[in-house]
Image 1 (cartoon, rainbow, N blue to C red):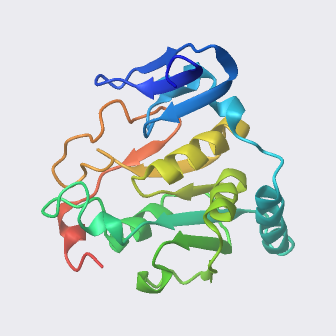
Image 2 (image 1 turned 120 degrees about the vertical axis):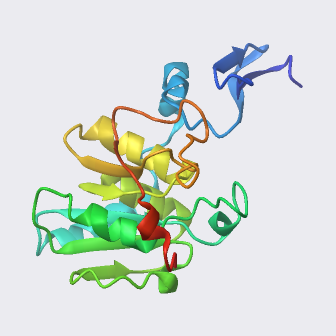
Length: 212
C-alpha cells in the first residue's frame, strides 16, 4: 500500500515528509500537522472550500452581520482537554483567560459565537450577546475560517481553521495561548507550533483558580 499511493507524514522532528507512490492522485495524510511547515507541502489545496458546510456556515454568519459589522468566535475545548496531554497539566484553558483576551480586541463588536464541545460549561458573563448553537464539526470549522477573528484553544481543529482565516484575511486578529498545550508548564507543546499569524497571550497563574 505504501508504495502504491503517496504518503504525507510528520517525522519525529516535526518535519513534513512526502513519500511518492505509483498513484500520484491518491494521498494518505498522517499526523496532526500543527505547524507551518505543513503548508509547504501544499496540503492547504486539498481542503474543499466549496462545500455545503461552508455555505451553511456563511449563512449563519450573514444573519449576524445584518445587524453588526463584525462577528468573532471563541473556540472553547473542554472534555478531552481536562486530561490531555497530562492529567496534572491539562490543555484546557481557564475561562478568565478568554475574558481577558476579549478585552484585547481593538474594535467594538456585538456578535460573538461560542464554538465548543461543552458550551453549557462556559459561564463567564461577557456582557455581550453570545450565540451558543450546536453545529456539526465541519460547520464550526468553516465558521472559524470565515469569521472576522477569534480566540482559540490549543487544538489542531482551531489551529487549522484560524490559520486559513489568516491566509484569507491577514488583518484579522487571532489570539492563542502562549506555549499552546503546554501553557501550565510554560513549555511549548508540540514543538514548532507557534506561527507569526497568531498573537500569543500568556495564561497567568491566578487565572487557573476555579478553572471551569
